[in-house]
Length: 408
Image 1 (cartoon, rainbow, N blue to C red):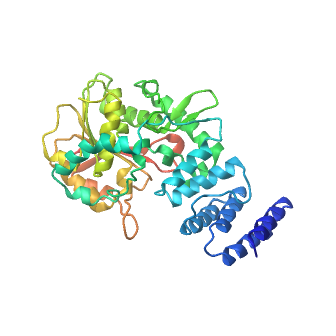
Image 2: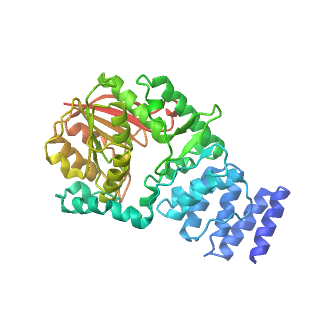
Image 3: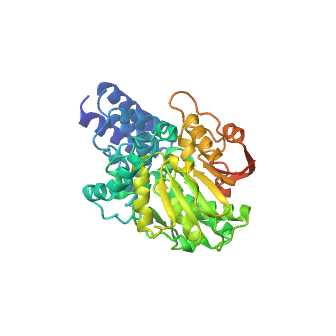
């Protein structure tokens, strides 16, 4: 069987339509060309056309094992099918930078997608910009929480110029079939925006309007509103926190953001509370350097510190209440790393802990074996669960839960 045979035969069977026969042809081609990713990509396309998420994901996992240089369209050039495959491709090969660029290109085929604004940095100028921060972090005391992170060596140098790399946030089909494809992805943005509006007692959504700089992905809804996950998630998280703690825009809380990433929550926290201060802490030096550059560009210099875990060993800046946050990163960490952070928090004068997890069970990500529940470790460290809820009411069955603890 040659290439023209299996691709041509499959297209003919699809036109009839004879999907079972088309699937059999592709399965034969996959056996005949074991090192070729294309039959598996075609099988994934076939599954995407049938809205069969599990089969499409399984086929893309097989394609990823063959490490194709590109992700060609084998059977169809349908934009929505291409987006579905791109979502799957990132989910099974997310650390491969070209796969994320390919997802962005697929999104750009839709009128509702508002492209990000490039950072303006080349790889060389970005490296020069973050070099002083990396040197400072290298000279700072090390803490076990840094060595325990899975992501210490993950940051691809090419991520730097794009900074935020939020294309990963649009791989909605990666974990939840209910979000798979263009229409479902856009509907999720609308549902969560509507939920955020209902809870926006502080009026943060307009304050958090996203300009798309530094790699932010934005979505234009049917009513013309342009939104981003940064804007929506930040408004929900901080409105809930304010409601539970009795904060107003004039309050002077201190934020200690653990696993701060590029600085998203620290930036939005300082916008929400103009008299507040923040620490943006991360176990990955490259990420901390990225956050310092980003937060400085956002006008937060003088009100925020970027550092590694050992910063918690020193006295904290003024501010009350003192709130530690961890947004999703403990869902991507081993239990040993979480325990190391909890030990640091035990010696710090912090009143509250806000945790957001990828799922309602709040499990860790372990190198070997299944995820472990993290809530028992938090409770053992002396924290008392005050409240918990889905991040969005519309996502009650999807995971993404928030948990609020107070110091015991």
